[in-house]
Image (cartoon, rainbow, N blue to C red):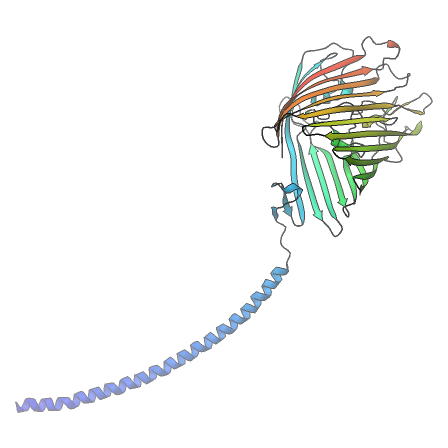
Length: 459
């Protein structure tokens, strides 16, 4: 018992010593840990300071980069615009507004010639060309012909400048051009219709340069026809030109210099390209209430030079045209006269002059015109009736087979079930009469009866 108590007495000092030693060891270790922790905290604080400094540098660099990016012009991307009437098909490239348009059209013709089986040239099967109506032969069966050559594609641009705005226009179709045939591909070559620049300087003055409708031709009065051209007595001409337009109170005045060409009977070439000066044209466009009109005058040089012989003469022509609009009807007309009309009227159905035996040029007086009535039956149905004629006072020494007169009647019914889609039919009756000097020809008049069916969608 005593022995056990002595052992206990000896154990307590040892335990106290161990606890003291452990306490000293813990305090020593704790002191070491605190020192390390303080060092780590200091290091972290230093890293945070360095990181903050680096972030400030990066922020300045980003701000500088942002200002540089902001100063760079935006890339040319297409976006919707509100020009050209707000059409949703318009878009913008940079500061230029762009419009793509045109139409797709199918024409189906049933033609019956009184004096032949077909037109004297293939183009006369595509649309009415009065000069290729056959005369003096035997009539044939009704001929069917279909094509899509009048379909067209155009691009219009409009760009604002420091002085006004510049508009450009280019248009193409495939009529009056050949490439394939009807055996397999029915393909046709693309041809240029229009290509011009129109600089509107200040809202009153503008300059046009390029190829487009002749200033002598008031295209706004051309009747709505399923035929590519329409009445035989109309002016119909596109050519390169330089034109100045000045807007006036209630109208506008135009002056133009246009590409010349000379067509003559008794010539070895048709046309001649020997002119020294352009065709010069002046036109006034006016409007009084619902009546709009145009007065045009032209003077042009007729000239040829074969090397062995040459001659020239100066001719003139005038054209008066107009349109009167009523609630459901329109009246359109055109009257042309002059001794230099030639190629400008009836699709070159007459020549402007003739070469006499002495080599001089004799100019030929000619006249032509049309009157058109258009009626809207309702919002979807409409009709047109057009009467037209053209005539030339040819010299008596020309060949009896020289054309002297053309006439045409057009009557159509058009249906537009939805916007931009037109279905319709048109009846055409046209005649061609020859000079028949001395009555040497047994038959001097031929006719064409044609039913034209068409489907057209504009875009």
